[in-house]
Amino acid sequence: SMYRERNRPQYHFTTRRGWINDPNGMIFYDGEYHLFYQHNPYEREWENMSWGHAVSKDMVHWQELPTALSPDSMGTMFSGSTVIDYENTAGFNKGNTPAMVAFFTVDNPEKQVQCMAYSLDKGRTWTKYGKNPLIDSKAKWNSKDTRDPRVFWYKPSKHWVMVLNERDGHSIYTSKNLKEWQFQSHLTGFWECPDLFELPVDGNKSKTKWVMYGASASYMIGSFDGKTFKPESGKHYYTTGSIYAAQTFTNMPETDPRRIQIGWGRVSHAGMPFNGMMLLPTELQLRTTKDGLRLTSRPVKETEQLFNSIGKWSSLTEAEANAKLKSLLSPDQFRIKTTIKLSHATSAGLSLFGQRILDYDMNSNLVNGVFYSPEDMTSMEITADIYVDRTTVEVFIDSGAYSYSLQRKPDARAKETMNFWGNRIEVKDLEIYRAESAWK
Ligand code: FRU
Image 1 (cartoon, rainbow, N blue to C red):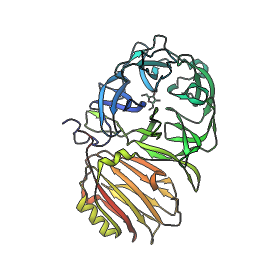
Image 2 (cartoon, rainbow, N blue to C red):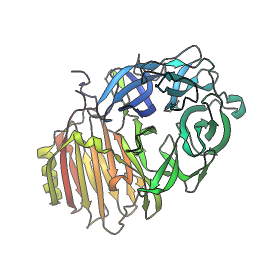
Image 3 (tube, rainbow, N blue to C red):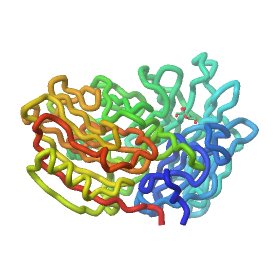
Image 4 (tube, helix red, strand yellow):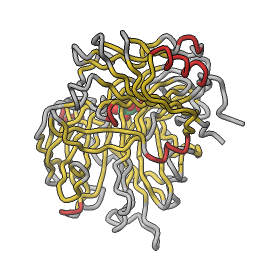
């Protein structure tokens, strides 16, 4: 079958052929999750930017569809978002079929302008709006960096909101009809691929905060009145590594209001007919921690179907745990959940294929070089959920309080290079899972 090349991730989305970068237009509609993405259908390199398209019923098994938006005489198709225009504010609807409307940046050597297109067949075919562009703000900002429109419906005031990267931050525009847009505010300190969404605090639906997101997984927590985002926190990072330009699904059903993100994995795929990948879909939540309110991220429950537990132990010595790794793991793709307890030294971790996948330095409060201290600072323990696929590793610390992703070295599959390390550590918990392929 297809999608089985040696260095193709088996449970992360990649395209059959060509280049991908940012996820675009992520939306749930009529039982389908839509993933559009920056795509060069012809080569493995960034060029000819188009919107590729894939659909899924569970965010795990994806079906690639024909290219949704291709370059035209105005330029190439850069990143953006989609909405469903239930109330026919733009007048594109046909009978009972509401239009799916896409907002994207058209890039040409001179400038970047914001445009739209609509679809009446669930994103399969698109008609570009005849009066594009909607926004041309190069002169105002004296900058070519005006891009990545993120549009959503703001219920309390019944208007559309567009968050747009302009020069040195994220601007907010509003509209009643998706065609005319009014500038409202600008927040500096962010770069590219904005997202803005409301989340319950600690799962309590009557207490919410808004999150402003920028492409490097930076975020601020604050309030939003439909026109202006007011930060109430500093700038934080919930995840680091190969992730970039993540976006979240909009139009989730009322019975399932999860905020689910997919990020671009900036991972190279040597010798493959494709390049770039998407990271696992993760649920974002706001959790009160010892350091204040923070965004957390962990794989959605739908990903559980990919993993079969093949062994679970507690209170192992380092040597015992290493023997389990070596006897059980098929090194292509798998998952490990573990808690390591330190006692006779200040650092410990796990190495796979000669890479330090987990490196906890309790004395300096570092996990893989990034400042992080566990919730229970006196426990001397670090808990990690580690997803290994053929070219990438994703690590979720303390139920997603911090996470990171890294490139796995291609062809590094030797079992001898898998081991826990640290002076007389206890591997308090260890569970090993086999990983299925998501490609049928
Ligand atoms: C982010 C980005 C976006 C832009 C797109 C072009 O990775 O630079 O700002 O729209 O990629 O492919």
